[in-house]
Image (cartoon, rainbow, N blue to C red; front, side, top):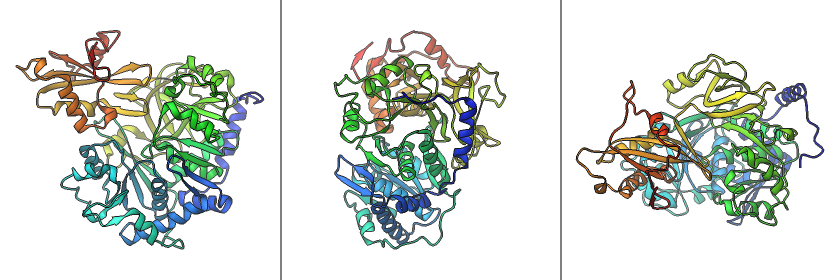
Length: 546
């Protein structure tokens, strides 16, 4: 797929970036939707192929205006914070775009959260309304009492009606007018999302993302893809940034987004072939599926990668007959670093590429703002328009992470003499399990609430399939024998208080821990004890001691 592409020089790429940054584009999502309808009208836009539901650009805007009209009738207006806890349904992008039209703020909630986690997000985000699917009624039912700003009559249901919640999403959609216009159009810096992402404080932090953030993200993605994108496959949930990025990209490009109910690695390439997909985010578990004789018979023009094992890069391109390129981004910054499509000579290098349009980068000593020399590892700091406005209600975190427009990513990189970036590791005490970020401190906090656990420490275990798995070390209360507190009792406690992806896979009992000067467990000592951290652990998945 890279055949025929001429490799641009660094000077040519810099000139092209300047040209991309100078192109006009709608700077609010609501204006972007209107522009897309003018250009693409009845062309296909949203396709929920597993549910048999499709919407055109024009049909989507009609639903968006109807819903926005009804939302104003129940008290949603500019600046209102509305939480959404939904599966992958057309209602999700329609609601997001309706809130964008009103200048309101969406708070997407991970649909695997427990009542404890949902309460935290509702309280922390100052959410006033909640749109929730029937699958998660037991979660909101367990949030008793509701947070201060939330009332039963402000809960909008979908999939079924719920006692005490008078508003049903289909009724709101049906009652609204397609001729509705908001009293005041949003502006580029108006807040659109409070998007939660895990951090080292033990609880997720809400990234304040503006209308400009999302429209610019789609503009940049369209530029970085050097062909006309027509069909995008999205199997991620909408509480991630990926689906919203895809929607923005599709609005810019006139493409259709094909939504799966959830990611299934075994079906992914079958969907790509069946629906003539030409753009995807491709994850390593998909490559590790058994080979299929039809793997290379697809229309994929680009597969974006995220931390793929370098040795698998060339075989992946050959197997799927496509161009595959590393991109690096995060909720806080949107696009950060990318590998240009014409740089086939970098396949297998492990490099994430160069700074994206609208982005400046520098590497600093971890925990400081002092730049490191070229070739040395340092924390990646990023600056540019269209990044997050800060963490919602977290002045200390903002002071630590933001300075003069620069954001400290918490990721360690090195940069070679030609300017290419290579990720080295993470400064933050985080575990990356598949596509999920897990704060070790949050899992430790839950473990410590078990009445029979005195102390806990959580670390990452390298895993060939998911990247990393979660291991917990626990010290029981004095006088308790290990057979009195079996692993399943601890796992059950975690399941009751943590989303499933945060529940440790491995558990090791300890008689005690070594502590550092700040009275914290010295986890580096635990990690250094063995070249295989699975050893001496109970494996929850396989049900065996290792």
